[in-house]
Length: 330
Image (cartoon, rainbow, N blue to C red; front, side):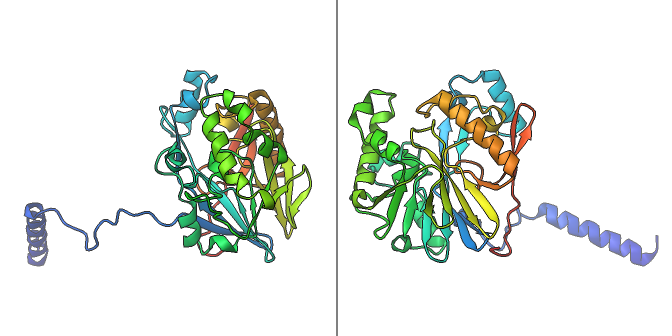
C-alpha cells in the first residue's frame, strides 16, 4: 500500500475510533416539540380557499363508531390502510372561502362553549380559533358561517364559554330541520349523547337566532355556494358545492366520516347517524355522483387537509388525496 494511502487509512481508523469513544452527538438546535399551525391555502377558481383544523377527534375502538360492522372485516380494512385496528381517529377540516365579496366559514369545530363537554372527544379538539388566527383571519371578519349540520363538532364553536358570539358580524346558514331537531328537548330520550348535543345546539344556535339563514336544497346560500340536501347523518345535513372559474369543490361535511371504512363499505352504519339506513343511501348516492362528476371533494373528517377525489373501487369507493401545493396559493 502506498504511504499516502496507508496514512489516509490509519487517519480514518483513528477518526472512527474517536467517534465511537465520544459521547452521543447532539444537534445544534434542540428538539422543538411544537406543531406547525394547521392551515392550508388553495384556489377554487377565482376564490381563495383555506382549510383550517380544529384538531384530531379520537372516536375510540372501531366497534364504538361502527357498531354493526363485522370486526374481522373492519380490522382488515384498517390494516390495509396502514392504520391501527384498535382505534379510529378523525380529523376536523373546516373550510374558509374568500369570494372577494364575502368571507365564509364552513363549520366551527368543537369550540369551548360547553366547558368540559366541549372536550368530550379529548383535548386535541377545539383548536379552530387559534388556527384561523394563524392563517390570517379574525372572527369579526366573517360575513357568513355555513353549517353542514348542527352536531357538536360542527356548531359548538359559534359561541365562547361565556355564551358570547364568536363571529359577531356573521349570519349563520343552516337547515331549518336541523335547528328544530337539535333544539328540541323532546329528543333527549334518544342515545346517551343526545342530551349534551341538544344542550350545546341550543346554546350555540340560539345566540344567532336573529341571524339564522335557512338553507334550501339546490338553492344558493351565497354567490358561488349551493346547498345540496344529504340527510341521514342528521335530518337536515347538507353538502355544499363551491364553484368559481369552472372549478367546483364539494364540501361534504359528515357524509362519510372515514376515508377507508366508509368509502370501502358505504352501507355500514355509523353510531352518530340519526337515520343509519337513510344515511347509507345518501352516502352511496353522493359518492357515486362525486366519482362520476370528478369534482374535487373536501371532507371534514378525512386525513388532513381532506382535499381529494372519490373514485369507484370494486364494490365501493376509494379516496384519492389531491397533491398539496406548498409553493403557492393557486
